[in-house]
Image (tube, rainbow over all chains, first blue to last red; front, side, top):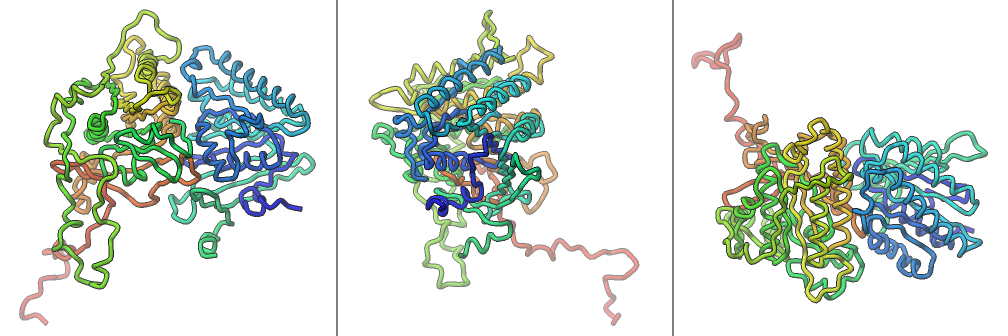
Length: 249
Length: 361
């Protein structure tokens, strides 16, 4: 039987996150904002009693707390209860400024591994999710592509443990960022693309969601494309062309 | 600043700020009422505002002056840096504060301009009715702020340092020193979110023409590409610093001198991105339709903080106008084409005779 929260959340119904989705990538193109995907996935994880290790590189913990509160979860309480843990390099960013980018990436991964191990030990039966938001900021810190790919490689190798899942969000501002995004796209089981409308800004439609799932048993990719409209407290999705119907129903 | 849905009382009492109840943000004024309205009530504390300068850097500098003047009037602390011009000269040219709008929009206030058709709607309130300012002040660009007022406020003018220990962080060490100095200012002024002080204030950071050739390190002549990449790293670090403090930064950048992919990343690291496109020196300068305005004002990005939806006004096109006493941003309204007939000139020469002889029928 489908859960009640899933019925009321068309976005999560459309994404339909499954246990077989071990590596999930979210890409935001241009000026679009894919943060709502991360927060909605966090809602689903908490609803299923999963644990989260959140690497924050773009927003603050306060932002996640406020948005998740709209979705019915108290992140601060989850942190206190040990259901979630965070790694926040933004708090002491100047310490991260070093010419040795290999060491930077290495320290970051070791911090992730330690926190993940603690979560796995404290919750011996549930699933543990590593959420990275947003990986592309490592490019801003001038981390070389080879160290970025190594970092991704180490992170996705965490899924060798059956209880670990990895969710990575990545911003594609221009063609240079596509090297890493192609790498992530290649290894992911579920790829979610958020992009603005190609025709410009619309009052009725905020952007396009493309969901692409790769099954281990199925050779063919399954792709669905939706339009969405962002409101203060929720996201409404609908099939392309249904915007007017969606507004008047 | 880290956003919480309930703002503590010490934060609510900061002069020159206004809480946004809907999403638990603290807003402050840019100094330009029309810009505050456009950005959903003001700039959120803890954000980075990225301004792509017009080619002459005339109007971006005016925005910066308004922003700093508003900080001085509200008693906020100021940190200002520039390599293209003296920071003292920016401070000496700050506009003076007024208690009233120096040049109100006549179309909105005068009774003579009331619509004659649809009279039944005249008593209904209009959205264009001038509102009283919640935060912010009016300024007069023709008058300069008194030196005594400026001297009373906490202003830090950043100057370039020369040190023998060159850090290995940025290819241009100036960015490192600037970042360190902003961080030190945040710590010494107790602007950190975690600092416990009785009376909080805001730090306003104004960085003028960042990434311009004047910022290049003269000792490394061949490293311009790396020095531009420094800009991305600097913007990301600045974002991190602002997020953890009661501070806000405005960064103006000569985007026409910098590669697009660098600018794209900078926009991503900022919360509000604005592009000023001046008509001066372009073919639009002589366009009669745009004669009332001085340039396009493009709100490229308005981040959704503490919410799913951005307050971006959508596809509406905005223009800016520099009047004698004030700078204002308005919606672009094309004038009605009444004078089309006047502009039409009848050809005097050609195969067909357009000027018929009186006897011809």
